[in-house]
Length: 202
Image (cartoon, rainbow, N blue to C red; front, side, top):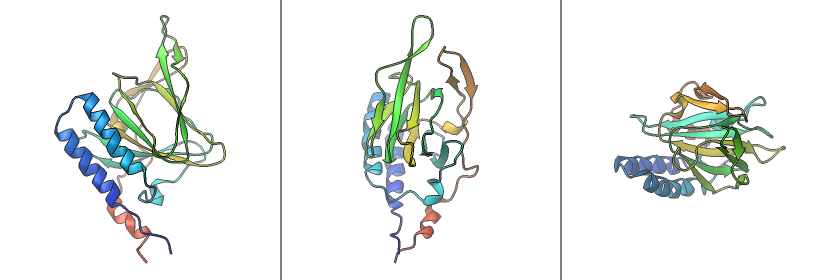
């Protein structure tokens, strides 16, 4: 019989992050402490319900796990089918990316004097337990891809807003900007605390 989901890990993370945001720290402090909280969450792969970890053959999935009641932050699972990737895009708020399962590459971009987007350094490979930060202050334009062509990868993303409702942009390599609002792959926020019934304790 399968083991019960350890949803208390996600509960603890949400509570601790809410307490951190409530203190109104500067961004550098928030990202530093938030990375530690997210690192503790993705150190274990025994809490994400299967229904929020399902890939789609056509595009990566973005499942909302939690949105703060004041929309100060949101928590999302990104599920990458084999070989899937995002376009080059920005976020316009602070963000944290924690690798839960598989691996992914994050390639940053910067504009040159002509406004063309060029890769900023080498791609960063995120392995399980690895956490990265983004924000307009430290670097906000990147492209993310599944590191594998033959398996699913899952990362947990945290943003300083209800990211599915934020107006932001995707870019072509010449720097042309196209506004978009991502929304979520799950149209309704599930009662995630009831999902533990999928894996009842023996």
